[in-house]
Length: 285
Ligand code: URA
Image (tube, rainbow, N blue to C red; front, side, top):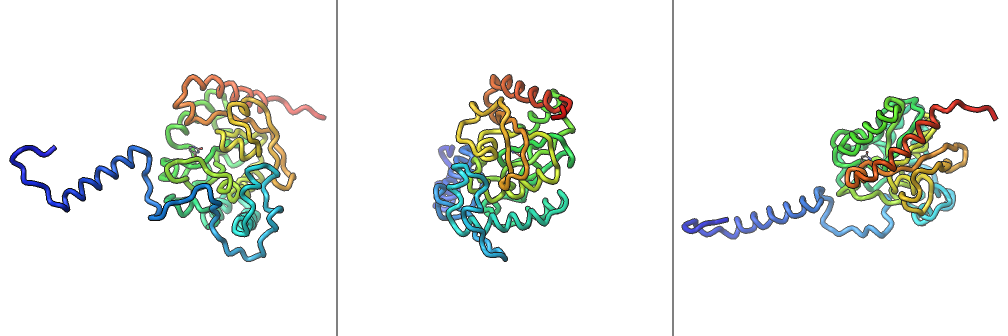
């Protein structure tokens, strides 16, 4: 507040104050990344054009699975080329380190060019029996370069420890770059990253998937129900070519649990089911 006796502010100072006030309003509203000057149509298909060396895969073949969200994302040659390139890079990765490097070098996911600082691949045990798949990196993950390292990640770690599966998990996400403003990744973004997720599963060879949050569960399982009806029930995850199949437990996202602590009981029940199945002796036949 400017008091009596102070000299009037100049037009430049007024502009600076107005700008400061606008920026702090945006920051409080969660707008913390400057991307570009033109508005982005989030409903339009947004797949970064890729110059794939091979001819683009036929659109139908590029589909991750026969689910509704996948089909919406497989209508353009750009999407098909980006997926073909992701598949080519993923197939060439012999180790998790190779895969991490392949993801970092991949330019087909538009999120990479929307303010993300770096690619965020995975953390955890390379031969873990449980693979946790979240939605996408948030602000802390973007800075630190590892998934689930913020408040939600700390809660996830606590829950995994309490369920006795700490140190038996490999943690990744459906997309590898932070969506601007921490929005939910779109099925299109998930689709172009899916070959890398599948390759991670092939390399780690987990026994069980834990799908954290609606955007992860719906995409990985190609289901349209909300997470509140999907969670707590064993589902079958299948790779795009049908060669891999795993039991998957959809559960509530830890960030949701931070906002709705009363829901922790449900997520805890999901984790106990998972821990029980993990330690169940394999029965022949
Ligand atoms: N939320 C996610 O889904 N993944 C992360 O890595 C962090 C927060």
